[in-house]
Image 1 (cartoon, rainbow, N blue to C red):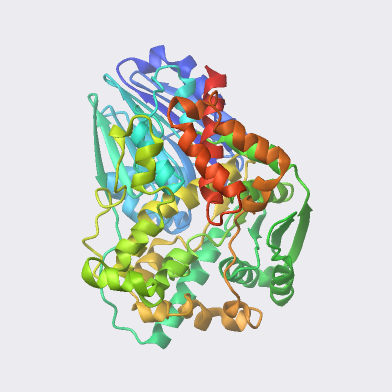
Image 2 (image 1 turned 90 degrees about the vertical axis):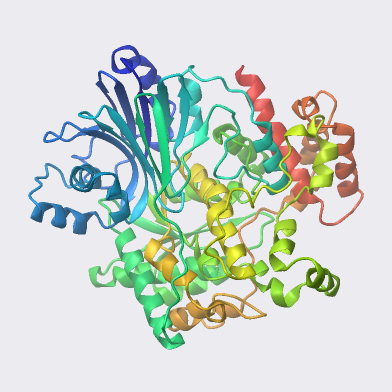
Length: 591
């Protein structure tokens, strides 16, 4: 995995080379193996590399000697070998075995539609020398980040906000609507950033910058295309698509491992990975971690590892959790109050001792209705059912459910609530392809929560440890197929992932699918009760806290007092305060 930067504008190649080097160094943890910059008259590109494929020949920025175009690329293209063969048949000559060069040649052959042919996790910036334009693209699900800032007739692009900040060219004023979204959702949605002047290129979008103007368009979305398949046929197709996705994501010139939590998704990925390499007489390295005070799934993980035959690595992590919290705050460019950031950081640190790449089970819950909210139509409280029969449906309940601080609470929290966005969802997501409440819920998961929370967390927590994570469930053909399956193939009133059970129960431990979903969240309720954490919490809502500049901390303190008074269900709100306060404090220390 890598870090990329680009600065495009009149004579930037002559005047901004030193700034490009500074920006590139800010991304060093994303690519500790190699670094480089390359300048054109009106563009400069920069790159830091974590070598995974073509270890000796994949140096970037990479220039195409035939077209003069150049690229910086972060990610992996999993079908690059097939694309390379197709392009060779069309007369293209290659000088390396890297997937980076395949993108360059695909752009030369297909233009901007080249992204439609890519199966991968990617973000790249490609300079077209002839047209004097910069082409940007990001993968369909948002596995790899890409941010940009427009300053007059100049465009600044980077994998992470910290690199844009390091340029010294951009005013870093906070976007208060984004912070309001954070209070509501515990993360900033993938169409916003914490700063007014910086924006993310959204997942499944491409962009073209030319003559000081940036044009952005969506190139992919989930579409309703009803399937005529029996359930048994759907089971076989699911098994085939996911198995092939795992095989493609095992391709690397370095050793690849897996994360194994003991849950359904990581168990499937681990067992399919072991099956894929079984002919080599090798065993996949599967990594599990037991954290002091956490729900311990290592017993289930051991059982899965034994059934699959993996080389199982378990570590009892006795880390300073408050110190680990501070480490994630220092690295993350935006507030993200998903408590599993800490365990993902620590298990990535553990796995990086042995491998550079690990496969994860991210995406399985979204594709196959694993989350409990997909059972809302059956399990809403009686009073809520009465309400929905009059005014709403399970989707309205879901939108309220995922907001931690409700609008009336945020209105009282903010000193100036004028920038509030009462509904952070409807104005930003296209529901035209959703015909049922469950499909609407699924699109929010796929288009907002997956990229804004889950994948952002995985990317940052792994990249701070120079580890690449690949998610086989996030294959666009598998996602398109899963989206169009009847809901009854995926969930009933009791549990989800029904089709995964039928497809993979024969290679997994007995009873795995009947286990209650636990997740990988940290035990924040217990942590917050410890003396050192409690001290931090009260500091966060004190009158001299950074929060006091933005929030009514006396009202915020009422939530804290309710938590320490024994009220249930308040701890996540306290965690949101704690993360935001620590992040704002980090910003003030940088000034």
